[in-house]
Image (cartoon, rainbow, N blue to C red; front, side, top):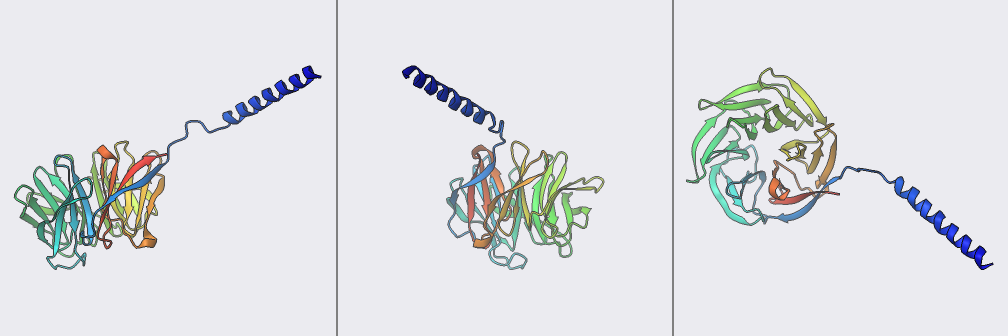
Amino acid sequence: MKTLKLTMYCSLIVLVAACSSKTKKTEPQNKTPEPFLEMVWQTDSLMTTSESVLYHKESGVIYVANVNESPWEIDHNGFISTIDTSGNILELKWVEGMSGPKGMGIVGDRLFVNDINRVVEIDMKERKIVNEYPVDGKPDLNDLTVSSEGVVYASGSSSETIYALQNGNMDAVLVKDLARLNGLLSAKEGMYYVTSKASEFGICNLKDGSLNVLTTEIGHGDGIVRLPNDDFIVSNWKGEVFYISAKDWSKKQLLDTREKNINAADIDFIPESNLLLVPTFFNNRVVAYRLKHK
């Protein structure tokens, strides 16, 4: 009888082990880690109508373009702030004298800023505006990007035009029906862009004017950043952030603050710490999120 019980017990153990082994075999193999955001810090609410952020690796400083109320009114109350990578305000009004400062880019020791109908050039050492480059008409200049050759490009949301700073002038280099053009990102393969009205993320060839839409339904497209792995993050001004795979251009929502009425404007990314910087426009803050995968 004892022998029979022992035999049955051993058989049960073998059966459980076999089932466990089969269960393990059915688990998905090589599952791709899913990206997500974890909030790290936020600034004080002194970044009035913060529209754009730009990280300067050499100094470790983050520049913040603050519209300060009306984004398209020539009121001369806009300013640039500086903060550190922990969200502490270094200088609230580092440079003043703009009306609706938005997209920014750095060439050498000069900071270029879109300001509604002109691009201003700021001497970063002297902390003052040293040049301005006007654009005729009502361009509503929005985002700004700098190519690897140091060429400054600006987007006109109302003019649906991409401008380039050439020989001291802002010249139109692409005019297309881009339905409220906003974000720009210069790359060797072309100019990436997002649109606010058409809700598209795409790439254009400035030489022949061709367009290629890569992803749709991104809301009021605003900022673009490229990650070290060549994937992208784009923001919807209304309060969303999307992760876009460069393999198949699929998108995943990383952030949604629309119900809280917190915007997500012209973003930037710090690769060394995996920090995504999100200016919140009417919420008057810059929020930093750590990009992680699970």
